[in-house]
Length: 193
Image (cartoon, rainbow, N blue to C red; front, side, top):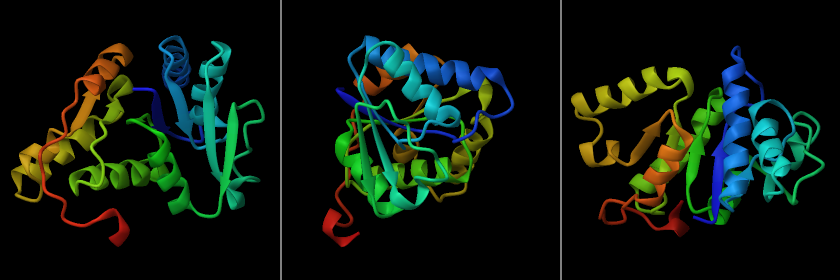
């Protein structure tokens, strides 16, 4: 894996652990020569993960819609900042640039990005690993909800198993490196979305 997209909050949350782990993830990327692809801002966990990469002389590419440039202050020290027109173009570009996705704590936007990427994987539009860094159990309830979807017949077990979860960065990266996408036929083509 040469490049990983990270989706995360534009705030720090209520626990210093979130910022610490975001920074450590960025540092780990740089030390393992993994390029960061992320939302391009210098605020919250987004800024922390980029700063972690840059502290260790790694590469960080931000993808930011023009209309968010004033709200999510663009990080000025990135390897590259790509400005796009829309949120959808942002996610598409981030997907095009990466070999996998890691989700950190965040709010609605983070969940929306995560679910679109895992839905694209479920549809067979990509075969990249989608992973959750479950810092201090932040995503425990979401993981239980995914199990409920399986239990109630709305999600296949094989699609549940596509979601990689760990509270340990090195373990999560190892799971991503060993990931094998399910052999699912494409329901739709990329051009149809």
